[in-house]
Length: 123
Length: 216
Image (cartoon, rainbow over the protein chains, first blue to last red):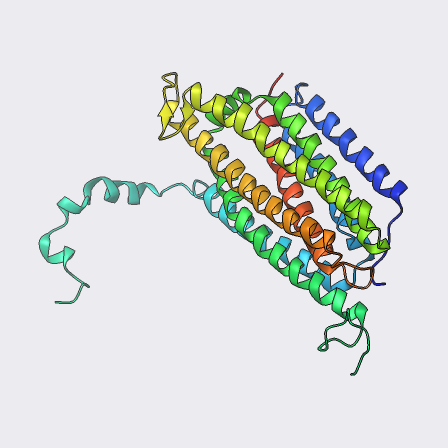
């Protein structure tokens, strides 16, 4: 036989914890914690997912190879989220210099002379 | 290496290696699934930050009781799936089929509740973007965007559930024919991994869609 056989008791304990977490996260949603509502909801979701991964999906008893695949997947997901959000949320950080603003207002495409507009496009 | 064991495919050294190879394959598939859902989750995070009031209003329009009930149903199905894998490991054919059937029924319950009590309700109330959108209040366009995310995220999740139900049906038939043994239960094991993954997606969808809109 291959693979670790987990005791029924442990499965039921994990299940009880998952149901308790579900009750907790639903209850907390009705309490005003400001921005902490989101943090608590996500922390509970991560805890529940960890329980499922470690015990139901046997990662606690799996070899390092499976763990590496999972970690790699989350690293790629973190890159996706981090780079997307860092782009979106830093666009307003540096104000447009006042000298540029004047240019933006005056140099609308229509205001650019025909000779300039075609420059650099090749002929 | 020559082996007289019928459960062992000839390209593997031993049962342990065969077992690990099939699990690794499923884990790599699940990694691609994380990226698949990851794109939608990232877009959801981004647009939620753009149009927070509309997304919070949309979240409050969903029925949190049905969401919590379905979460519990899915967690139960994960438990029965884990117990099914355990029964397969121990070679208990009767218990294996029973637990697979329970998992199948709980999965169908989830999709049924979603269809009959949530999507149908949203459609009739006029909260179906592009199909039946009758909401005329403030920020209607951004609320529509929230419901687009809602239908796509829950829809793709439900599609995974339906595929899971199909896999379970095959497993039940094969288990009935006595195809699984303590030496070779890899199909049950990897199907379990898939089922638990779909459960985990819902574990994140439930708070993101139903809960963090400020229900107080």
